[in-house]
Length: 268
Image (tube, rainbow, N blue to C red; front, side, top):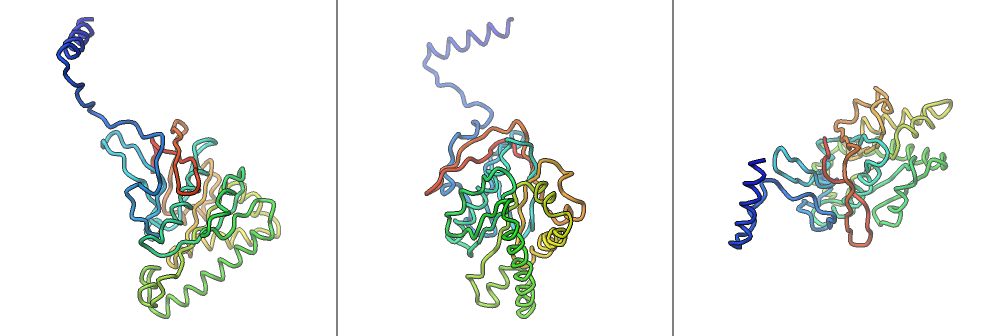
């Protein structure tokens, strides 16, 4: 076509005149490797990095963050292979970096997927990662978290604190930790605990998700479809992150460990 001929002639003239190529009118693709410690983040327990998002319509590639005091709890939706477990691992790694400028953040996990969270167990801020086969430890953790929330609610009320940041300041307790409970594969967790004598513990889990935000306890769960989240629990997840099937996988380089992170095409 005429336009192809014009383009070819312009390209040839540019090469002959040694003219540098003009800047493309769009951003470069997301990098194949990101160092989590070098991303422009606040490194605080109230700003936890999830990944890097690509927003072509805005010509921007911002760092995507989970804001516990604003978002409360979060559910991450995606089919198999979209990187739900990787997103949980990245949040856990970000929690370990929060001491640089914020308060401490402790992580606990229920791994009802493919044991993808097991790599977190060696990190100093991770309390325990419990598999689907260890029913007793899951129950003990739920019982402890429910009691912890009740106790912290009383302490918050005593100093009239509305959130964790206020409590740390008013009670002179900067080391009071934020708690993250990661649940990989909420559908499988629900199937195991929403039946028989165990149903009370699923109700306990729902109460933790509902009451935890104000006292600095947050649930981040993954699910393959909206139907895996019961309506009574769905209202407690103030934020929903959807990972698309066509999302490309990248890698994140952390100080002592390497973990994959889903980047690009992330919709919130």
